[in-house]
Length: 164
Image 1 (cartoon, helix red, strand yellow):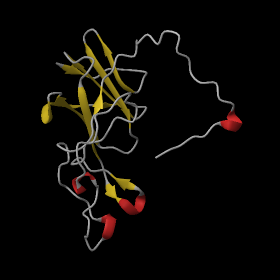
Image 2 (tube, one colour):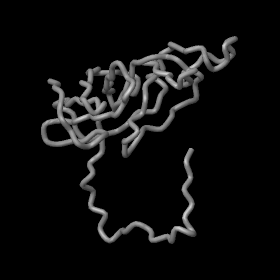
Image 3 (cartoon, helix red, strand yellow):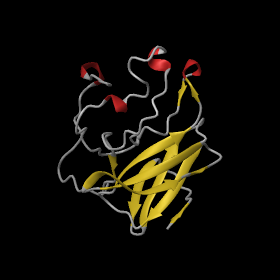
């Protein structure tokens, strides 16, 4: 059973009854969360629509899910590369707030949002589904006991932030 939920937190958050999903997207027309069979990565077992809130956060709750659930998002919206909009529901997206993800099993050009070699270069939308090869997000238990482990105390002048 699924229902919209007002969650203050973004990402996937688990409790005793299920998982609450929340994703920000100001320009999306629709958002779906796809749940996969953990033992068979390409097998989608559920697809649930999220409801858009006035704050542009899309939310839902899926009962019966728990820690270890494997999921990804499909986000619908305009495909207008010139305006910076490249929505493509054929492409499974990672949760930007995920605390764990599955590894990429093998490279495939289906992971690209465009058709390689097309005359329009990277402006030609690729509608091939990539769910069987795309990495997916994993619901984790945030209550892990870190014991005596503490974050490193590196001074800002010695800190390097690397983004890929």
